[in-house]
Image (cartoon, rainbow, N blue to C red; front, side, top):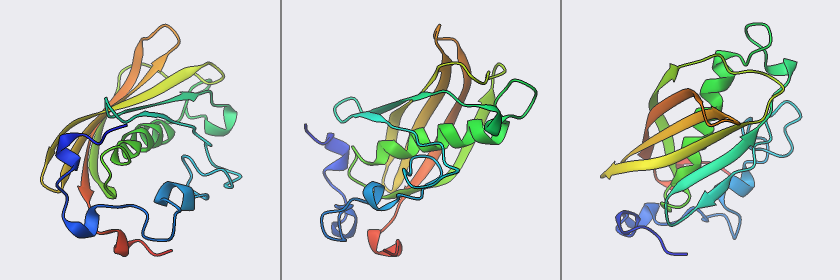
Amino acid sequence: MSIPEEARHLPPAMDTLTDHGDATLDERATNCFGCGLTNPQGLHLKFAIDYEAVTATAPVNLTRLHEGPPGHIHGGIIATLLDEAMSKLNRPLNVLAMTRNMQVDYLRPSPLNQPLTVTSRHLRREGRKLYHHAELANAEGTILAQATGLFIAIDPSHIKA
């Protein structure tokens, strides 16, 4: 596993996510609504991350707890899925970054109780600015929603243990 070239030249304060012993920020975020395993209300997303391609993928199958329009996922939950997927791209780039903004396009209704997939890919980097893209698709591959996001790399010391 190699780190992409653009991630190799970070300022010293941002070159690691493991400033609290051996636990990564992801491992310490056990109560994260998107991926935390201990949050009883959370989505419990489990991402497969490709460090070479700088992509992240997770299966999604939500229930009425996440309903907006009858039989469909609430738009805010869709935005959360896309944001969470894009945030996972910061790990293969070896940087801690926070969402600055994102634009979501809701293309089709996203059904509940059906297998869906959320995927994300890194687009480019400009200094501390990281640009990512994410999509939510159904089992046939039809894109239901997509987003682009701007993430800003921050010093890990800004996140308290």
